Image (cartoon, rainbow, N blue to C red; front, side, top):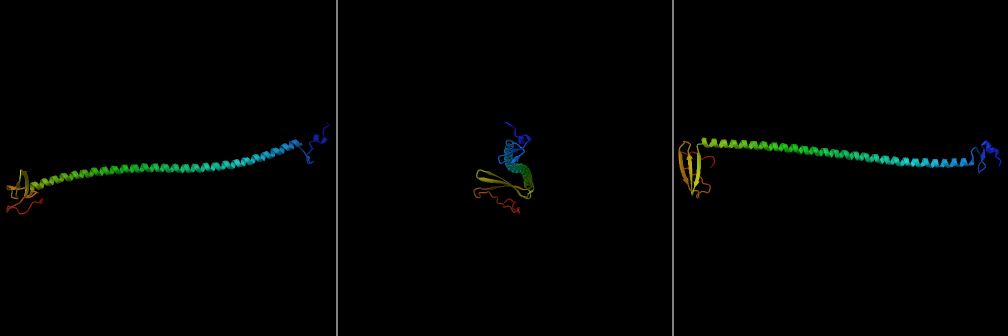
Amino acid sequence: MAKDPLAEAGIYFDELNKLRVLEPYVGQKTSELKEECKEFVDKIGQFQKIVGGLIELVDELAKEAETEKMKAIGARNLLKSVAKQREAQQQQLQALIAEKKMQLERYRIEYEALSKTWYYHSPWVIQSQVVSDRAYFNTRCEHGRREMKVCDPSACPFVRVILTSENYSAAPPFF
């Protein structure tokens, strides 16, 4: 077979009888490669769109996770703060209770001291003792005289002292 002189020069005819510089086989493969490249580029574009959407979705989820994380940290800090406030309030209340107990003790001691002072410095001092069915009252008037009075407790359920002496000018404050 003789070689085609045009083929030796690198000129070929295709199926439409158009003049080509490439062999028809190479031209066909080049066209197929061009189509495959176009399909590949289209698929890469679609892949980039999908990946871009995925990246946006992951970024949104990361932002939401960060927001929730900050909320959780804030809630934890608030809880710690509330716990510390309650602890401080409890300590304040305990200190207040201790202070009030001390104040109560001071008032009790002051009351006892004033009661003793009144008892020893009052013009009326009355001591009573119930023996069997009679109440005996040891009294001391404002002039210092001591007297023993007897009263029947059944006559008065609270055992009142009946003062009969003309030397007594006023009743004691607890009557």
